[in-house]
Length: 291
Ligand SMILES: N[C@@H](CCC(=O)N[C@@H](CS)C(=O)NCC(=O)O)C(=O)O
Image (cartoon, rainbow, N blue to C red; front, side, top):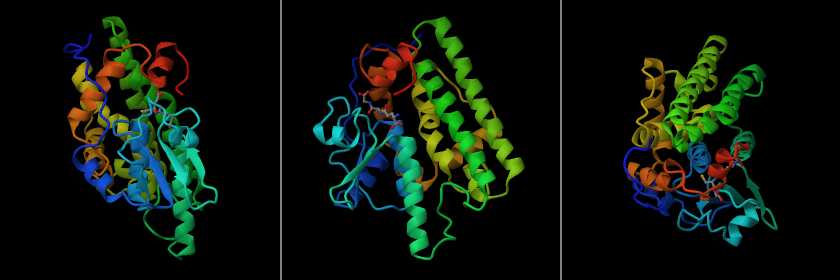
């Protein structure tokens, strides 16, 4: 079912394109050290938020730490040896955080705190609607919950499917999951006018947690799934306009390498489903939850 042949390509260890320029801008010591890997979508979702909220950070030398080699510095911040991780150097001794979803909420909270301290509580830059509108915040969190429990696993099941029957079923599941997300985005639009609740889905919205949370897999659907599975995104004008706004957003673009990096990197893990290459791939193969 895989297009092309397994050419034995290996994952990249350094960013290319716009992402490389961003790395170069973040090479000096800061309160936050960001443990990243250039190909990783879990990393990219955090990276988009750091860029958007303009939180100072230093990227760990050579984007990246190699999560498959599990260097000691990575294990100190992320016990399973998974990227992303944050080292928080403003604590003495430094503290650490792992798990992309937790880190995203942490950077959002940190940013809010900094804004309040600087009396900028009305700043536009926030990933969630204001605390005074808990329902609008919940609408965005519903979308994120769907992304994490449905969209992300469906993406890997589709990419890793090796026979035709599996691949057709997994492709359908992935499309259904995209459809489910579109339904939740339309619901938010009906039920809230807050620009952050609308996110980039709406032309009057601003980048939000869902954009950061889902964007990296939507992007890889448009290149990696297209290349290895012949996948075409649904012909849904609203959905495609959203993707255009998202992929062209400055904070999103700043974290993207060139397409070749993703195609090469994914061949090894998923497209040919080589055994024992990653914790995510193993979890999908054995029907367990993602790590
Ligand atoms: N649940 C984690 C998943 C992170 C993850 O799986 N990262 C991959 C790279 S994309 C990794 O570090 N893999 C190393 C391994 O499989 O050992 C999160 O959301 O941060």
